[in-house]
Length: 345
Image (cartoon, rainbow, N blue to C red; front, top):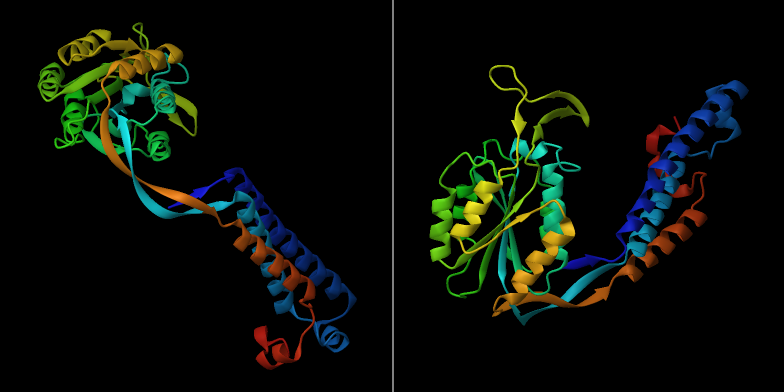
């Protein structure tokens, strides 16, 4: 297991293609200038030790030096020991609606991005609870199993989009059924399913499935994103709206937040419905609910004793810099024997 402490320094790697481009432009300029000065055979006689290979080698070594120094600034760390720790918490599964209706912009920036923001902020306020992530539209798809790795959860969350599932529609019952498989019956932890959706459910079975889930000890909380007044579903290309989704009659489809469906699902599973318009209010509500629950002790494995590894990359970076300084651009005896690029011909 590894950690990257200062990821922002990866931007320093941008200097490498700049160096390559500068080198290429310089070589083109030198070639044109020398061509005006003398022909190819005369140049070879005037500068017999000139080596294109050594110039390329120097630029590669310089690029390696910058790459190593950039990684040293990032400061990668490696976990040296895996240990088991005791934690107390609740098992929480987030089911995020990724149907096309979630592209509606009746809540900024759109429903799906708002849903991601809500889940991210809830995760940021968790302490030792375990979490899992599900994406669903016409069908449900597992994104991340129950884990204590919050960083991984947020990474999977940010990559979710409306094109990830070919089966369109909104079947909340499929998300609930899949969530039931996430929880471990042996550990008997408190189980929470948080559904983030606009409530447009095409299955009509969600309430029944929610009731069955509650009988298995799962409490379901629903968060509604969108506006009851509704809005059209934009069809974009490269971020530009080309059109709005239309029905079979050619009329623009208006999708609305269906709070009644979400309220019904929550009530059937001993939960509550929360309107997702105000992020702070949602986070506070969920935090209060989780704090009021009994925490179950469970075991979690995690890496400990992370050790800095920057010194290796710093050492290689300095080595390559020194090598570049002492590496001459003219041919040497061993290079003449190799005759790379047929430079003696």
